[in-house]
Length: 139
Image 1 (tube, rainbow, N blue to C red):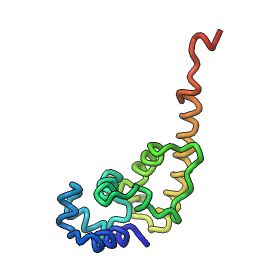
Image 2: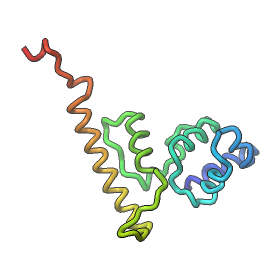
Image 3: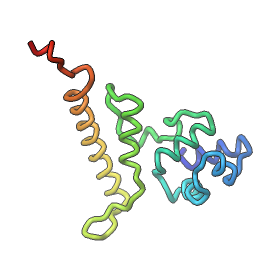
C-alpha cells in the first residue's frame, strides 16, 4: 500500500475530507491533493509528520519500508528524520538540463542514501558526545 492509499484509507475510516485534513494539519490543500493523487511521491517531512500526528500514527507508518534502504543500527529517530528530509526534497533531478528517468532517480537516491549514512556515522564517531576528548583524558 503506497502513501496515498494509506492516507486515503485513514481519511475514509474517520470520515475526514481533504479540506478538513488540510486545515487541521496546515498542509496546503494543493499539496495534499498532489500527495493523495500520487503526483508527489515524497512529500516534505514536516507535512508527513503533521499528517501522522493528525491520525495519531508514527511517521514510519507512512513510509514504504520495502523501497527504502535499511537504516544502520546506530541511527536515532532524529537521524532517520534528517536523512529523510534531505532525500525527500521534491526537486527534479537533471542531467545536462534534461530530467532523468524515475528509475535512474531512484538509483541515484539509493546511492546518496548510502553516502549520507556513511557521513553521518563518521560524524558521530568523530564529533559524537561519547567520543569527545576532554583535557583530562588527553594527559
